[in-house]
Length: 163
Image 1 (cartoon, helix red, strand yellow):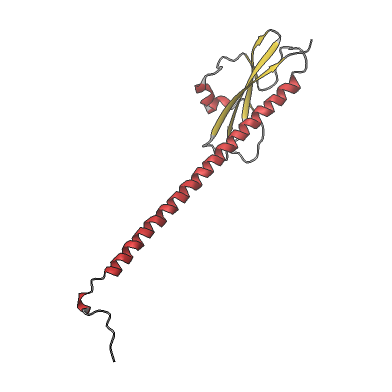
Image 2: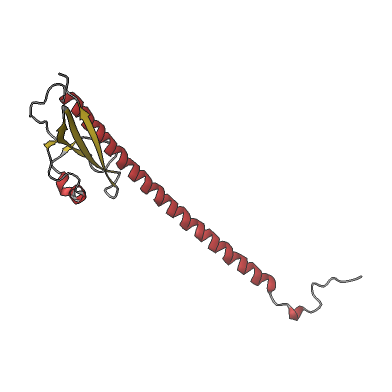
């Protein structure tokens, strides 16, 4: 009967299989760690995008609210009286440093929007008329689910009074 031997020279084994398995294990660990880090980064990016989208939608809601205010208020000839939230011929026009300063927004019109950290605010500015056409500029500021995402939008509205 013949005996099977795993090696003719048992004292000469070098542990190559163990070393190769450890190398593969380290490589798999590095790949897994990288996947976990990428997953966390992608989750934060998605959260930031959602936060910015909420701020953008709240700013658009503020523009719509201002448009509704204008359409219900401007139903006849200009009388010179202004509703709350409207400024006549502003001096800060397109000054980005003015709009970027949060303290300048505290006195402007706000309304409630759910899910955002602060209620959006807007100002309606009466711009100079062109002929009989009245021009208004609305600037809206809104934040998302937290105050790290801020969106400021502007829109122009025109109104032609009926004779």
